[in-house]
Image (cartoon, rainbow, N blue to C red; front, side, top):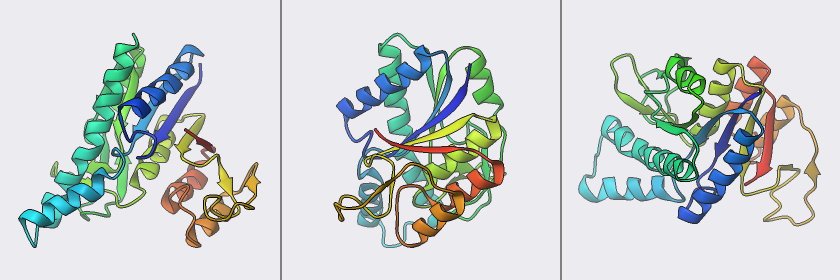
Length: 231
């Protein structure tokens, strides 16, 4: 019985129908006998909309308060996904970054994960639940909510995979894998069957947005295979 971590980006959970589609994919993994932990981003453009809202009420919203606000986007998508799975008859529970044991430094808006104390995640897996974790966020030693910066949900997923010793971290996005260039802009771009960690970091440095560089670095450090596929 494999332990897999799946990550779904904002475009994959942008509306109710897409969330239900993601739930069906997760259910397939569960039906195979896998133990499944899922990390989700906020729905669609939620993060950008929350930033706009913050600046509508204050010219200087403050880094701490902004992080608390932005973390709610992933809370919404994780709870909706858990609801969708439960409606299908599966045991599922949503956890915030703090509840999942993701501990960070206090660098608001670009915090770094210091450690993961995933006892609650393990406990829920032992109950047979699918665990849905809000990505992009963690909590400091003072219990202040932090966010990890753009692409932070990728980092959450790979870090959790490393902590849980998962067999693979599956990152689902709106492109079918890793290409030599963005296929939405360059139709002749070639899909790569396999790519090394260093090459992936290099692609990211040139602007590829498939997997965040920090997530790739963690994958290499802890030898976690990262599968990139279309949702």
